[in-house]
Length: 322
Ligand code: HMG
Ligand code: MG
Image 1: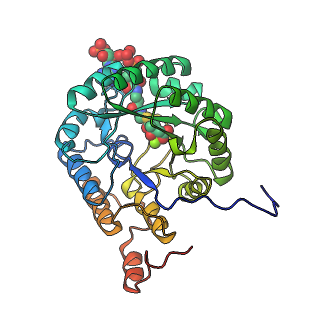
Image 2 (image 1 turned 60 degrees about the horizontal axis):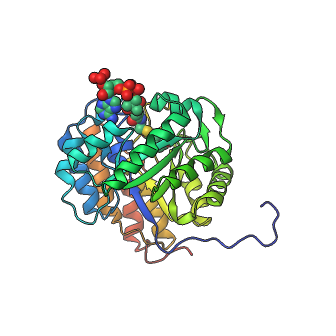
């Protein structure tokens, strides 16, 4: 609180779990088809770089999101990686059937805090989509699958503007009730700033324990890292990132990519927080997918000259800034 003479001590955890969403959130909005082989190489590279939770694709309608139509192939050819959580996005029971047939063991369901985004993204009212997700979660869990949840538009909606944190918390609580092991709170448009991120996360933490929450920031206005840090200082210990800052939602006009995983890892290394991710290897993976897409990475930490400069000065993880 502004002017508080005794502000609470930061609750930064010693280790942060990173959920890499590049192969799904990062690629779903690409206009040009990305070959399945390139997606599989991307997932393999992310595993080699140390990521232990990677969202590999989605079983949504291929009419709505054609880029994800080959997720069955990506799942089939990456599921051998032991010890890596590999959720796939599932919008309904048809998607769940496809996910199970492909061999997925973990899914993610994605509800919206606002009515308009539920209609645009899921062709259903918010209540209809929650009822649908409750069925999906029940059947998935009965079949032994793990279920993660998202709350889209937890901060801002492309159609309704700023979102009441209480609305996002209500949807997070509904997903927790469905048995989601983790609920990711999303700034879908990337419009949020740290004060709004803080208010949103505090409201969610009043409804769902912090250990079951994650954050997911798009970086449209360059706020994703600052927003993430505020949430980590409030006790959040899981963060979604996208290699090279890839991404965007086809149903969130104007929103750009997610927080770049490289930037997140660089910041956490500097804070002395463990991630299990090898930044150099991750930068190489980001460079390769950027080459495939024919575009520069938006990660700042991935800029080689900066990384090399710091590394040659022996000035990185071994000297954390706290
Ligand atoms: P609908 O058109 O209302 O579906 O779409 P329907 O149930 O009326 O079915 C129409 C046809 O689609 C039928 O085929 C179904 O079988 C088929 P037909 O009989 O006409 O031949 N169909 C499917 N086919 C394959 N897989 C399926 C499937 N479902 C139906 N799963 C639906 C409703 C929910 C399917 C559609 O709205 C949809 O797929 N939405 C997903 C959109 C999406 O993927 N958005 C991006 C991901 S969310 C995101 O990026 C946000 C996030 O990152 C967090 C954040 O940042 O906020 C997670
Ligand atoms: Mg997203």
